Each structure stands twice: as structure tokens, then as C-alpha cells.
Image (cartoon, rainbow, N blue to C red):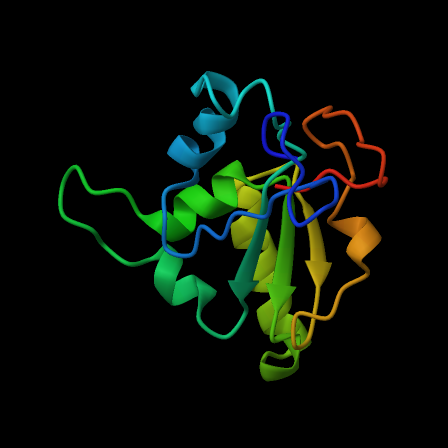
Length: 141
């Protein structure tokens, strides 16, 4: 449902926003500040998928002064992090990556995945941002 209008003949229970290579702060802020979004949607949480093969390169990527490192911002804002492509890294490398993630974000749940396969109940409708669950049982960002 968008406002008071059904979408495709049924209630819309959630919206997933893909923020690939984007600063997540403005996206999250939209859920609290935008007059058309705020009354119609709740922020369930922020899920970030990171590539275990390349994450450290992205975290260490030096940006010009005043430019945000999107990888750092995405890890910092997430409440759930999917550490993907774990088959491409050794256990030792994964521990180093998880330590780096923890240096940036001490509270996010980290789930190791391969091919982004994950139990959807661990990322959808978890109410990480204390959002109410809609009638279909899921609130999604």
C-alpha cells in the first residue's frame, strides 16, 4: 500500500532499497524525515552485503578529502551484515575481515554466506529499528 492505495491489488508490506555504492545515511534519513515516506513506511533495519574477497580493499580505499568511503559508511550503518563469498577466503582471512568489520561496527550481526544464500527470517522483519510488522508478517527496508 502506498498511502491509501493498494499496489497490484494487494497490500504492499515492505520496500527493499538497494544502496549499492551509496552512502546509507540519506536513505535511512528518508524514513524519518520525508513527509511522504515517514507516515507510510517504517525502517526495519539496514542490511549490508559485503564481498569477503574484496572488502578490505574497499575499506582501505583512500578517497579525496571530503569524499565519504561508501564501504566504511555501509558497514558502519548496518545492523545486519552478510559476509558473502566466504568460499573465496580462508578461515584466517575471514577472521581478519570480521575483526575489521567489528572495528567499524561493534553491534551488527554478521552472517557468513555463499552466493548470498541466507535464511530470510534473519534479515527480513527483524524489527532492528523497532518497526511494527505489517499484516503479512514482514517489514522490509
